Figure 1 (cartoon, rainbow, N blue to C red):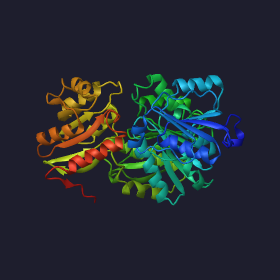
Figure 2: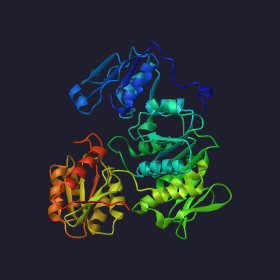
Figure 3: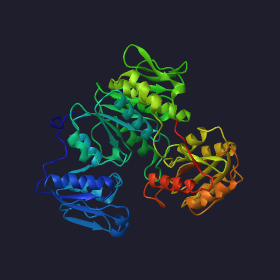
Figure 4: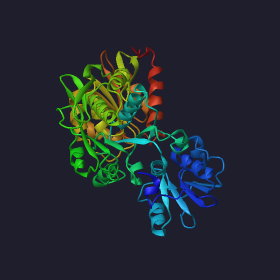
Length: 467
């Protein structure tokens, strides 16, 4: 839908206007640069102190008139427009106040979808969205399609608008917090799954509603791609305005979609079904990753990518960092970095990706999510659980009844040391924390990088050899 068709589009002609940007993170800096380039008088407000921002490398872009840090977010009164990063939640008092005052407001994702000239593929979900997004991007590359991959990947999206034309396919990972403010939907919108997550921020119904928002502005000519093996996604299908596309690794699909049949990944877009590759060619561990492959294949089919190129991309794809990433071997065990796992559901998927005995490293900041299923699985699959960080007592109490060798330690460093002392030949030491990194680390990537450093420092470490 073009900008001209919308009467409620955010005004981008802001020369000489006063704009406040909430957050000096990646999205906030991207927004600030955009508004400065449009001649706006930009103020940035961030509750973190100057020292904290400097430590994170969060410096105000050139041209910003004023930066206010270390105090509550500024009142929006008196500004001509407001822009928020996804970390500023929709019930934040400054967002509520801006709405009450009738001040135009936007977010990075909302503004990008408003101004992007290319075809947009958007992928959201509680888990799997990063891998699925990266896979679709790899498929586009293999098919020779001009494309950009970005979104909830630390991308300066607005800064890339200049390289996007009407012929560009834009593949976006979109988080639930980015969907708080969007008023447009991607032409191809996919939901990998919806499971309990982020219940420290939103109620379950609110969280599901945010995921649903990726579909809410589609037309009948566009495509809505769902995981038919996921119960919540089944319920969300009723909200689809676009063409219904279903995916499953459990049963063949009638109609448009993707599935596994007789050991092959199959897709259909229209009348005929075709195989894109053998399921055995998927390099990624775990059934959840096979589900990601099937969904990515269905998305690529809807986008018109060549099926042979799609199959080749699957065969070549080795995954993305911090997602069941084998770091190497030490102390007789295989050490695996799954720092992306910020919920118990993701930790469950990671454990199920291995047949070997698991030593599980849990920790970080708790998100008020149930531990019942993780406790049950850990009781049968884990030899030990070492819990670290802010949530160590919560995790240790939650799993201790199922795994006798469950212990709380202070830091990730302590957890690696404890695991190294406990391993025996054939174990998998799995960092799949089940909590966010924000107790100590600014992102799950930084936490994963620290884990790699610690494992590589073990005395008999041997790196993973890529075949």
